[in-house]
Image (tube, rainbow, N blue to C red; front, side, top):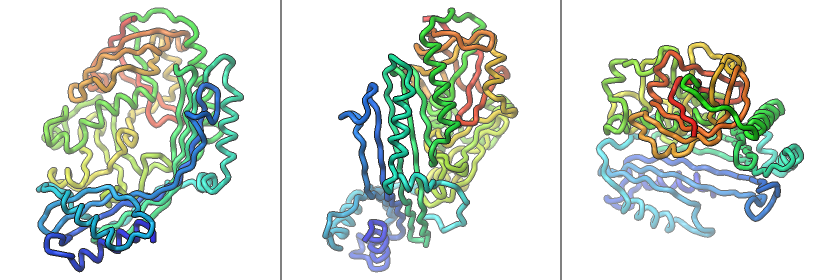
Length: 440
C-alpha cells in the first residue's frame, strides 16, 4: 500500500477511534510526494565523472500536521515504513508524534475543501524521459560539449523530475495531481553561465537564446573595459535581480516577519496602503503561470493557488500570509511563493531588454555579486563586490570591470529613474538603477 493510503487510513481511524485520551486527534493534514528523478552532468568538460554520474532516484516522503484534541500541535516529516511493517509501526509513530507536540495559540487551522484553479504543472515529455526515453538528456549533454568554445572549461547539469502530489486532510480535502520539473544549467570557466528551470522541457529557441547570451558575455569578459564614472548606471541581470528580491523583498513581505517586527514594514503600512516604490512598479505572487516551477494547484496547507498583489503601482496592498499568519493578521491566506521565485516584479510599461540596452550610454552590467547573505534585509542597504561585471557604452557591451556597488534597494525601487527591461525567457527583469558604483 502506498504511503499516502497508509497514512490517510491510519489517521482517519485514529481520529474516529482514539487509542487513548492523550492520543485523541482533532484534525490532521498530510502532503505526500512521490517522485522519480534523473540527473546527469559535466565536470570540466568530462561527462559522467565521479562528480557528475548519471543517476536515477525514486522515493516517497510526507509532511504531517496534527491538531490534538487538547490543542497541542505536531509537525513531522514521514518516510515510507520498512518493508513488511504492520499497523504497530504506525502506532509507534503516533506516540512519537505526540511526544514531539507543542503549544501555539496561533497554530494554523485545517481548511475546508475549495474549488481548485486550472494550472499547467505537468509535461508528459518529461514523464516519458523518466520512463526510459532518456536519450533526450544525453543528446542535450552532447550538444553542450560540442558547442563549447575551444579552451573553455564547461560545467553543466541536467535534471528531470516526475511524480505525484497528494494532499489530504480531516475536513474532506483529497487532491492528487501529477507534476514535472526540468532544469539545465551550465557555466564557462565558472565565470559566467545560464540556467533554465520550468515544469516543461526547454524549447529550441530558448536554448539558443541562453547559449548565445552566455557566449557573448564570456567573450566580453576576455577584454578589459574602461573604468566606471559618477554617471555610470548599474544594470542588474535577471539572476542578480532575483538575488536582490530574495534578500530584500521576500523576507520583508512575509506576514510572520511583519507581525514579529523583523520587517521593514509594519501592519499599519498595509492598512494605510503606504507608498513604498515608484508608481511604475508593482509586485505580485502568481502561482497560476503555466509550467513555472513556482506554480502549483494547492499549497501544502490545502489552500488553493491564487494570485496576490503585494505592491500595486508603488503602494503596499498585502503581505504574504500562510494560514497561521492569516489567523493572526485577521485576513484570509494569500498566494504563497516558493521563496522569491514565485514573486514577479512588474513595470507599468514593460520594455524589451534589447531596447533598454540600446539606450544605455554609460552602464555596468552586474553578472553576479559576492556577500549578499551578509546584507541587512530590513534596512535595504547593500554594499557588494561584483568582480564579474561588463561595461556598457553607447548601447554595447564591451569589456570586463571589477566593481563595487552600494545603495538601498528600497530607494532604488522608489526612484523614477529605475527601469525594467524584460525578455521572454527570464522571469525576472533586467533592473537599471542610478546607484553608487566604484572601480576596484
